[in-house]
Image (cartoon, rainbow, N blue to C red; front, side, top):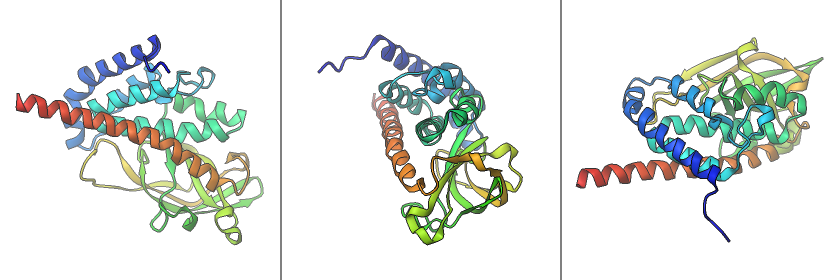
Length: 267
């Protein structure tokens, strides 16, 4: 088996490394200390196709493979761990489920702006009593005519304070237990009843915003359900599996940055 990088993969790695060294590293401490969203850096990644790197070009992405994703994300995380987290969630936890489970209409409307980097996406799973145990979700979605009515609070949501779109997990059939969970695409900018709650004061990676998402009788179109009712848990687990690629890539890049700093200090 040939593990050598293709020409395109090598180009992605070199481009991401240049961005990390020239644009991200010099500004990383400033953004972290001020808890400031690195909007300009995210826009640059969008222009390069890195915010939807494995999404087909017809939906605003770069149409590359997952090796390219790992190479790019590792280098970006080496330059600024916060930017790496933002990029990872955008790709793995928002773009992936919409691309994998969404209809053609949903992809065109809700995937394209995020994969292109014009908007930021997030994934609303975690609650006060549900995260590692997703079957304990308390956020509900009730069908009322041609709309779903969402009520509940999501906690510790990466990108939550800057996201324009979200994939939200909610209970649609309490009696069905874990099989009563469904996923929804929510246009956060145009959904009455939605608000951003507390933005967490974290110990690190502070330029990546982490916040509550609050839904109080928030109404979204009936067609915004992702896949079939009750398919949410399966979609959730598949999405989290995909997210492991992003987490591993971030860790690789952060570890490399630590090693580089240690060697420089020791020298």
